Image 1 (cartoon, one colour):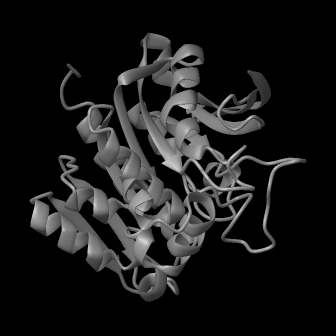
Image 2: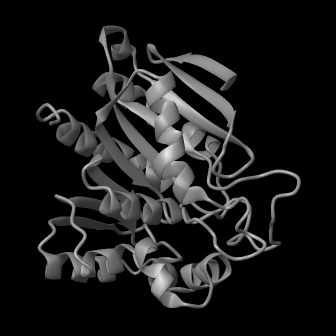
Length: 281
């Protein structure tokens, strides 16, 4: 692991790191904020998965999480959204290829050699974080924005024993039923829609996946609300499954990081309350 940069920040350290990923076969860059409480021992971990076109840097620079994460004692881990570099497949469109990994393991050419973001964020990067940082892996939460909200929900639903808390900002809740997801899943996973279900939060819930509760914030002026996000689908799925869902629609807010930084404190408190409520088993 290579340290690209480190800054002292609110008593903790905001760092950016790079390593060679065996999952993607490429160098991968990620950011980690380590709060000052690490000096007394291991600290809870909150993962933030970013959305289309983003890298680790978007939330690190615009999310405004560092001050409160330092106060609460939360480590924040921000992966990239896809493999990148020479020899890695790409597409001219913003919603496919580099910057648009959708947190799946691609099975179709030309994506399958490198686009293995499910393996990367579900197994490889967590193992690296556990080995290299003062992370209490018994206390992990996950959140994300848009495509990353989709990733956060699906990872939590597939791994309920790992993630003790889950939330999302403007997530794609049913990618198998909206244009962004249909395009990406067809390209990465093929035309057999039965292979899409493990990457669709609503489908996972309908199939029996459960988490204790979910927080979702959604901007009411989000231009993608009706066409791509459709949070009512998650509300219906959670209601049918008996999963407590706090779904908050905020008039006037859009899809931007101005929206995210406004409600970031609520999400950090949500996760801290659940991660620190009692010792993990």
